[in-house]
Image (cartoon, rainbow, N blue to C red):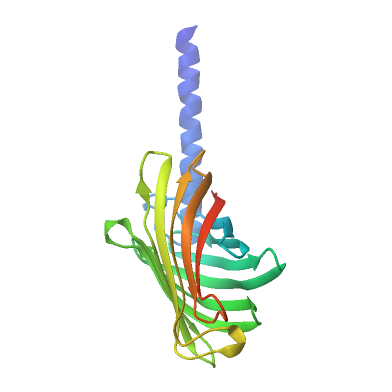
Length: 244
């Protein structure tokens, strides 16, 4: 009995493979490709990504803040739609100090670099729009770099960001980072000063419970040239980094 069953299974498998080949031939014919071409590799898939790099409570010797910095994209290996947002909320006075949202088209220009173009809407301290051109990627020695130019009728602004992940263990990671914002001119209603308008540098130590959830603590130095009183602030930070 084993012989007939085995023969029947082989015949069924042969029939299935023939049906798959016939369907592939029809698909090739419909696309206009030559009939003897192999079946295309299905690598043009759509992926999604979201990361909340900063989702944290901050405190200095005078004020308490909530700060966020998040980005996400949808697309394939070469073309993607990006959304980025960041801002700062002053807890004690119940006031949003800064908030922005970027909508960008991203194109992979090399294995480790993406070119970005789009628009930025700034909600606080005032409503404003900028055109955005930027590039970001992985530089030598695994430094993550990002550089963006924001162009409006008032001035050309720029933002340069860099960070590095230092693995102390497989789960415990120290991440120093720096962000510099520059402007070609003063913009009074947007609280922007010419030259280096603001600077933030810090280090955060996170523990990855799982890759997608990582609580962290750290310190951050913030300098804001537009501040009326204290331009410098040294802050303790604590938060949870999220991604999926």
